[in-house]
Length: 121
Image (tube, rainbow, N blue to C red; front, side):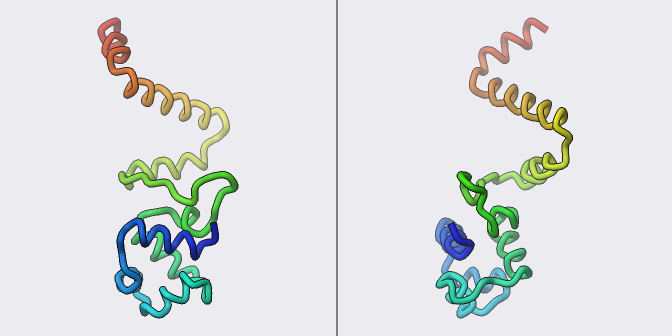
């Protein structure tokens, strides 16, 4: 999906008008109209501001991973920052981080299993 379509989609998901997005980003509403129409691509500074007000990463806003959704909705910014830091791990560290996340997810899916495991310890 092109960046202009992602901008429109995220704006609509937030239920913001084009005027409201322009005010939040600091550009005139005509620019937002032009961005979403595909007439102009937002400059990098505006994309950075949009990512911040949309609470998404710049990569999620500006680039689309093949076969992946353009954005991930993680509400906890601290959690998101920690997730973004995972890109700098070595392969063994990345494998360990994935295992830890798998265990946390498993614990949430099967609370009785987690309770029994704590009692056994």
